[in-house]
Length: 227
Image (cartoon, rainbow, N blue to C red):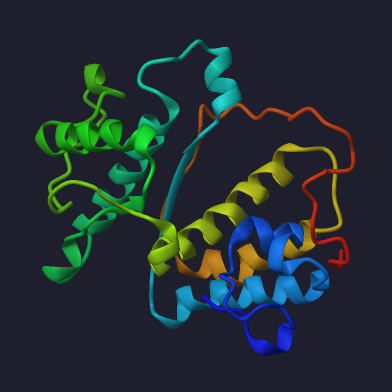
């Protein structure tokens, strides 16, 4: 995803979440309002191509407090996500619409865990909930999960942008503090993510927590965002 010339930043730069949000690298010196517009334009691709969004996550601090170590949080989140996708696929009207291929960002640390999980779930369901019969096998996921480098895969880049907004929004909900970029995050969520969201699962475990830190979020890069 390339930045339009009117934003006055290097046109070869990808709309990558960290630099565009924080105003770093090629985005240094680009006004926050223009960076928000660039982020919004990239997210608009989801609706323009008719893509759907599915997401699931785990609450890692609460999970750690409960002493839950096996499987790791990545594996739990992947199981929850694939189960939500599987249920959604089962409800599709057309045969081709009931099949999906999983492609994820290349991550050597988690790749084997992910492949083992998908293989297990295609056979009989995943590790979480197996003793209570609440997990489901993946009957509509084609083959196993594949990995690619994000810099050469536009779909992964777009998914990363979506995930960043979802994560920031969850932090907004949990935190008693408000930063000046919160309104921009809520707008991106409302206009570009929620209309295209097909299925999701709220973070697990569900007990909310308040992340430590000062009232001013050091990661708040969109400093001139309207309230």
